[in-house]
Structures are given as structure tokens and as C-alpha cells.
Image (cartoon, rainbow, N blue to C red):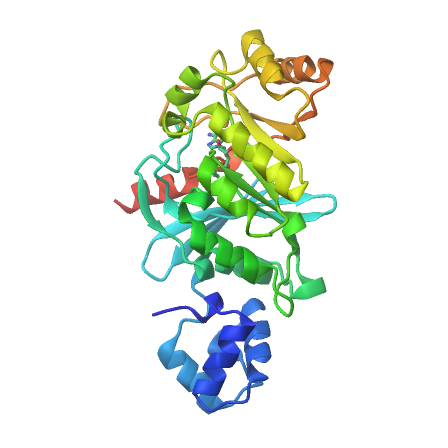
Length: 347
Ligand code: SAH
């Protein structure tokens, strides 16, 4: 059964007209769905309409199955979907508010060596309703409302999955989450992270969604990048940077890079120099991330000292870069770790 959470107000209006209901019901239902209500809880519509909706649609497709709190306040969620699949999300608490990390696929087919999400490959794409449902479920869990009353103010599409590999559903989600009358999170407060599907980045340029685009680079050298990110066999670093140029020319928005520091593999002086010659003068910002070690591989993270040394090398050459705060390390904060644990315990 389809979830009504994937409907925008226009589609809801069409639906209302097709069942002889007043079109203004659409706004009411949209508001209720984005507030996290089930059909039974929508007491401002008739019992008859609730019944029709219940028989034909799912209201809330995502349920919080489990939550784990970290010492630093970060909270991790395992969500249960209607077909029994699980995905995960991370809530980060910053001084200015909450940021939720959202998943776009069950599993992932990109196969990055350091990442736990792709260990079993791709299971399936999430629907737009299931991506949105994560935001709605956590907002409700935090006793948040819609519009100004929402508790989550920033979103990062950095959970499991490759958002641009689930292109249409991701775009539909981005339009729904920023639509007036619902939870209404502005694209400017959303970051979309991609492993660098160059053609999709160019396609995205034409969508007119002013969010922050972030590319997982992880190495300035094609040969080494291929070793840790199989997708680099299809798209060279030049392909990716050319796409970023197109994006900047069309949108005027600077872009971001994520760069995971893996001991001995991505954090040497040679790598810093490579990054500098690649990115110096480009309208970009680099986020350095310490590898979150996962037990399924033997890649090692870096010490704080090494991380700051690498950052220093970039800054000295005038690159705009920051080292991400380490959060949630005690709760399997890295992509896909909690789901892996769940799948193993279930067996
Ligand atoms: N597929 C998208 C978004 C999901 S991954 C992408 O590749 O960008 C989000 C970010 O987390 C990426 O930069 C990814 O490389 C990083 N990441 C994945 N596993 C990690 C780990 N174990 N430690 C640190 N960062 C990790």
C-alpha cells in the first residue's frame, strides 16, 4: 500500500476531488501527516474520510524501533519500515538546534571500503514517503510540530544509501520536506552528500533546489580513490570536479567536499599536497572527518594530532577547511553500523 506522505498538497487536492471531498481538506491532511498523526488521530476530518484513507493508504510509513543515546547527546535511531526492513538515522544536537541525518536507501550499492552501509549491497530504494517519514517520526519523538514548531532545523542526507542513485524519490522528498504548510525545512538547511555521480550532479543543477551539495572525495588521486571507492572507476576526479564547476556556474552556490582521514591511506603530506593542487582557488569548503572504525574492515582512524596536522597543511595554503567534531562514537555512529548489528542479532 502506498503512503499518503508522498503526496503534496496539489495531489491531495486531486484525491479529495476524486472522492467528492472539499479541496481544503488537502491542506488539513497534509498538515496532520507532517505533524506525525495517523489517520485515526485526524479528528478534524470526518470518520468516513478517515476510513477511506485508512483502507487505501498508509499514513506514517516509518516507526522508531529503537533509539540509543550517546554520552555527547547524539542519538541514533533504528527505524522499522512496513515491509520489515530497517534503516538508521542519527540526531546531532548543536547549540543552534537539531540536525537529523537521513537515509535514502536500504543498504547501498556503492561499496565504499570504509563504510558499513554497503556491506550487503543494495536492498531497495526508499520511497519519498519513507525518507520524509524519518524526519516526521523523529520530530514527533522530540515533541516538535510543523513549520516554526519543528524541532529538527537541519537535515543531512548522509545516512545509508546514495541519494543520487535514488534520484527521483530523493527529489520528491526534497520538494515535500520544504513545501509550505508542512514541516517546511528550507533547502538552505539541507545538505545532500554524494559519492560523486557526476552526471546526476549536473542533472541536479537543473532542479532549482538551493541546498548544499557535498561530495565524498576521500582521495586526490584517481588510482587510490578507486581502491576505497569503487564508483571512482566510473567517474574520475576530473569528471566530478567538472560537474562541480557546472553546478557552481549555474547556481552560484559553493560546494563542499567530505574527506575521510584513514591512517596511512588518505592522511599523508602527499595527500594534503594533492588536495591543495586539486582544490586551491575553487569555490569549495572541505570537511575533514576522522574515520569511524568499523569492525568489518581493518582500516584505522587518525589521532586528533594527526587530524589537526592535516587540517593545518590545507589551511596554510588558504584552503577553506574544518575538522568535523567527533560525535556518537560510543553508539556505532558510523553509517550502517546499527543496522548491521540488528541484522546479526536477528539471525
Ligand atoms: N552515499 C553518500 C551519502 C552517505 S555516506 C556519500 O557517499 O556521500 C555519508 C558520508 O559518510 C560520506 O562522506 C561517507 O564517505 C562517510 N562515511 C561512511 N562510512 C564512514 C566511516 N566509517 N567513517 C567516516 N565516514 C564515513
